[in-house]
Image (cartoon, rainbow, N blue to C red; front, side, top):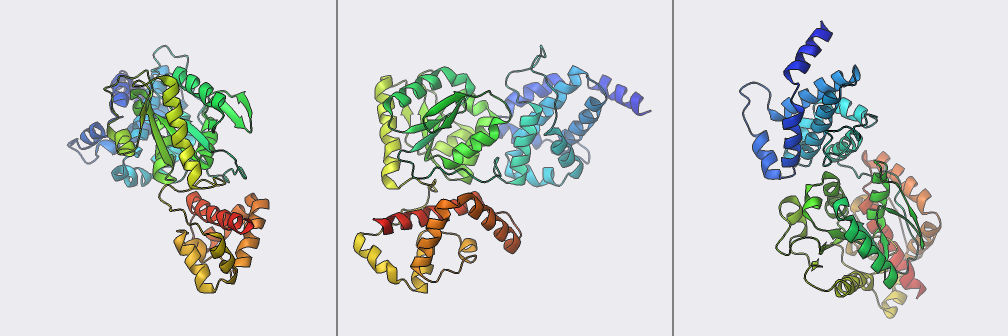
Amino acid sequence: VNVANNEKFRFNCSHISEPLTVLTRLFVNDEIVDYVLSQDLGRKSNVVEFFCQLLIKFYNLTRNSNNKSDQLTLLSLCNLLWSISFQVKYKDELKNNSVFMTIIKLLTNDNIDLTKHEYMPRHLSSIRKATEGLLWNLEDKPLHVATPLITAHRSRPLAMISYSHANILFCKQLVDKIRLMEQFDVWIDYLNYELTNYTSVTHSDDIWEEIAEAIEIASVVILIVSKEYYDSKSCRQELSYASDVLKKRIIPIYPNTVQKEYKATGWLGIRIAGLKYIHFGSKEFNAAVEELTNIVEDTMNTSKYVMPLRQSQPIITYNRNQARSLKHWTLSDISHWFDVNHIHNDIKDLYAFQTKTSLLLYAGHLKLYYIQEYELLFSRYQEKYGKQLETDKFITFVDALYRLYDEDAD
């Protein structure tokens, strides 16, 4: 009976992959997403529930066959629901569907390969990438949950480049020029950055962790603005993490391959509104790179980029005479130091520093045993508050400690 029902369902939905694929293109526009999801189906379930139930159905179908049409439908549904998950108003409904969430988690390990399918649209992400991105949106946690990287005493700023692969030729030209100038370091996903050695890496779903780590340790994020970037959910995920979660400084640049009239709109336009940008189509290439270099270097002049600094955090500095007087800090002074550096009260309450000396000793210890201390604090934080420590809270604390340590050494 189940087989007969599945065959009947497959017959009724034999061409559903085509309109779903078209819809995945349209769903990059949040207004269209809202319009479609607000439609009345005339029954108990709404459109979000309909998509979830459809995904569950096609998941079951693909477990029992290798039908490419069914697999393509499942792929389109994963991409559609990924787009929906960017919308805060629909998150709870998706999260509260336990069957749907279980299947999404199972699909993160899916090995369906449609890359060689003749009808495979190039704009669709793989099932694994779409479901991992969907889970990240719904669970409100960074793409990379492991201990963040640290590059101690970096002498130059590190810029992470976020771009669409459609703009790869411009990216390579830009990266080659930046590396020749040797004014700042650069991380981009087709190069594996380690000190001054660059090794090619293969594009894959596993690059997510590397991208997340690069965003975490970057001084700035250079964003290559284009229609293709706007159309990409992977790019949206990167920018959301950099801008919304970590509050990184974003430098938008328009490549010389886009029309001068093009301006970012929608979710992309909102995130770069008011930011100073560079249009490589409006000036000579070398002059544009020089301007970009000056902007990146300006970030280096505001802080010692040992750890990434939240965009909204002011720099608290002390002159030499003040530094000497700080050796006699009272408990009130220590509390004030936490406050002016905008260190979250959750972290402040985990420590019991009595003197400035204890702060400095801990900063020196942290420089040597960063990973172990992060893991220890992560565990203590979860035990006390019953939730995970947010990376940017820890980064804010460590950055303030390192600046205090370096000022004392001066």
